[in-house]
Image (cartoon, rainbow, N blue to C red; front, side, top):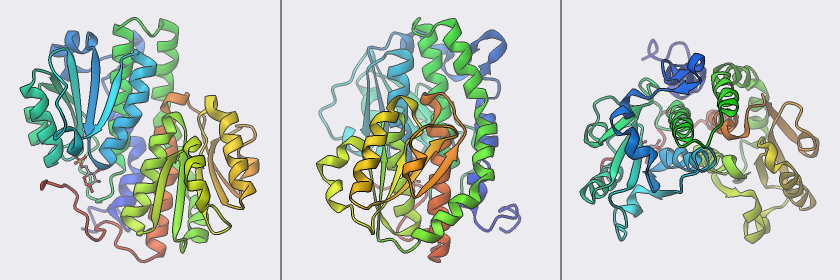
Length: 369
Ligand code: G6P
């Protein structure tokens, strides 16, 4: 087992550190910069149906559901297709208003999650095109979908998902670019910019990981917090949910992720000098709004930790701790901003002596309903 951990104390840390490589692996042979296009072989046979979809429904559980939420923003912005994201467990028991002309994308690291599998079977029965984004090759979900794209993240052993999430988001980004170009939404110039931004991600992820000691410092200070609030807007709202989930899963600290503006409708009542608030502020188009949210937290003495980009104005200065990440196009920021949040939960869990790779009560793959 020590050998499999490759010198890291836990699989989770190893998997966090692998992400620069796994994102690159996920894009290999699929992002064709020289031809300014995306090629996803697994979708070739169904591309017409996907391009002409009247809407896309995305279903998954846990971290995969969070990836789906990022996908919603990506598909809507880059391809202008209406998207709904569903918990597989809710979708499968609801009135099934899905059929021919609709596309269901199921996302699952293991490819074995019972509720996700059931959602796919329901949608297939009703004539929807069903696509999969899976990590485990040959898994049940991968086999039962009409077509799909593998994430190629390699085996993920830590129960808390890390590299599978960034690979899922990378696949969704590539699918959205492919669709946006096919639907004539993305101009050639914008495509060029987005492809080069996408290809810059592995290097930027490495840069974030080189700054892990800053996150470790923040983790030490908040190891014994009882609650943590995570706020994000737009592409980084799902990242707030994912950051909170990671902390709950492995550190057993109560955490909530919220869209930053919704704070006013409840969570703000919880903010006092004992409440750490992690603000994922790295999307530029939401900058001003985020600054006013941060000021609201500050006025209530909340302890602010921001994730912002190098050179982003006004955000870091307001925080008690500012973790900077390299700038990238707003729509790809989740792939960068999630990394310090994974590290934060990891270091806090280690400080609290928690079993990082095998957290209590959780399973890597939930095959019961
Ligand atoms: C479990 C795991 C999570 C995972 C979720 C969905 O809860 O502990 O890490 O996100 O299942 O799993 P899937 O394999 O379908 O992505």
